Length: 194
Image (cartoon, rainbow, N blue to C red; front, top):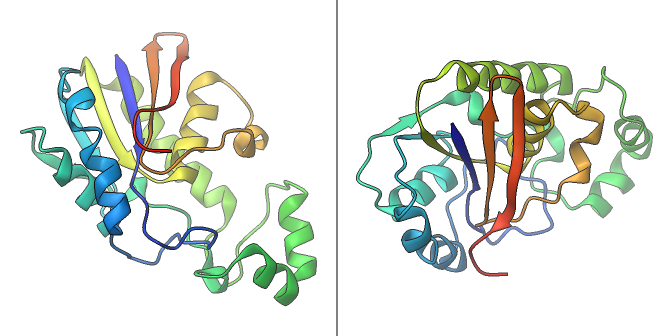
């Protein structure tokens, strides 16, 4: 199977932690997705899965692929809790000790008033297992940066500690070829505007 992982277009909140906040695409984000129509339209996509968050459903709809959009709540971004909508500088000033704990990469971190990283990884692993069991030939997932990073790690057999090694750009897609033994990353941050 070929798996296409598309991160939604820009929202106008660049530099801020946006996970559970349900924000729409900005005009620039809409243009990013429109730029992908022709390239993604030629890929013979069988299945279209999307996070139910507005920025993802708008992105999937703008592609006009002629496929039913299947919403999957497990494709939601992590809930950053009280860090939602803040910049890293604001978060670091507010919670320096928690930022250090997060940066240490431990498995027991939970965003304050938000989601535990272990729960997030478990949720994305459930998606990965469903993908591996699917008989689709080409599947498009329209989702979030954190989900894509976690899926890449899981499908390539990498530790989730490598999660931040992948800078997933908004309005771009990556491709993975899935085989019985795992996946091969065949494209990263393709298409779209810079």
